[in-house]
Length: 115
Image 1 (cartoon, rainbow, N blue to C red):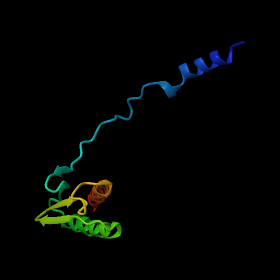
Image 2: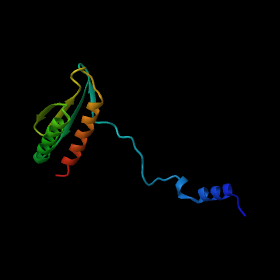
Image 3: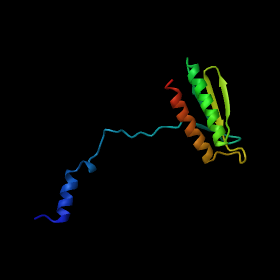
Image 4: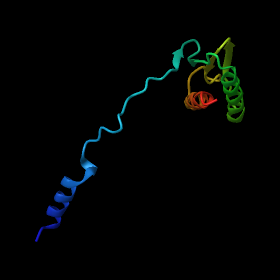
């Protein structure tokens, strides 16, 4: 008769739980946002080549989000590129609110590519 610890060792040795899996590669994604100075702020340019509908969707959704959040960015539109800059004006620095804004802007951009 096997002991409980012997059964556990056998179970885990034969289990897929502890095997190395290469099915899902893990990669670190570099942020597309840069940090600018004076004042410290996030900045990112989004490009919409030959896709005015996607650009329009992105800007409209971003404007609605910032109204809901009560935190506003500088949005510059040049041809098929939208540049977004965001920081917390009261302290002239990047805060968690700006990080949330950047994450949401990236999600909206991803959605805009589906059009």
